[in-house]
Amino acid sequence: MDIEEKILLEKIAKQNEILISLGRLRLPISELPLEKEEKEYLFYRGARRLEDTLVPGFFDLFEAQEHKQIVDLIVEWGYHIEIPQDQKIEDMDFSIRTRNALCRGKVYSLLQLLSMKENDVRKIRNLGVGSINEIKNKLTLLGYDWR
Image (cartoon, rainbow, N blue to C red; front, side, top):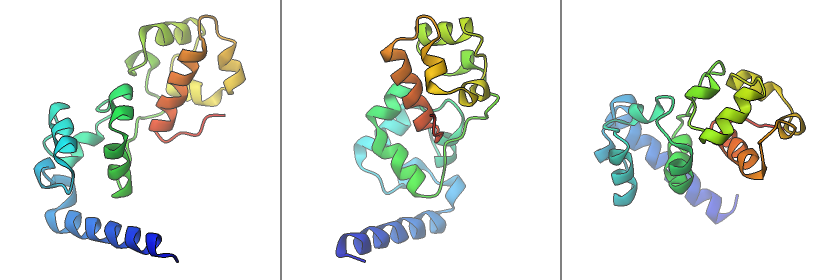
C-alpha cells in the first residue's frame, strides 16, 4: 500500500467516524465535512439532511455532473443513489427530445432501457449522439453499467 492509498483510507475512516457519531441518516447538511460551495449546492437543491439527497430524482443529471464531487462523496460515505428499475422514462429528468424519442421507440421504463443494448437504442429514431450521451451519463450516475 502506497502513501496516497493510506492517506485516502485514513480520510475515509475519519469521514465514516464523523458520520456515525453524528447519526448518519439524520445528519444535517450543515454538519457534513464538505466545502462551503458543496453545502450551498445541497441547500439550493432543498436538502436539509443527508437522507434528503437520496430521494429518487433529487439530483438533476446536469447539476449532478457539475457537482460530481458531492455525488462521489455521498457514494464514498456508503450511500447510493437509487432509482427503482420500474421508474417511468417520462418521470426521469431526460431532456424532452430524449424522453419523447424513447417513448416513441416503445421504451417506457428504466427496466426496459437497461434490458436493451446500446446499439438497439441507437436505432431509435431521433436519438442522436447527444441523446445517447445523455442516456449513458444518466445510467452511469444511477450506478448502472449499460452496454
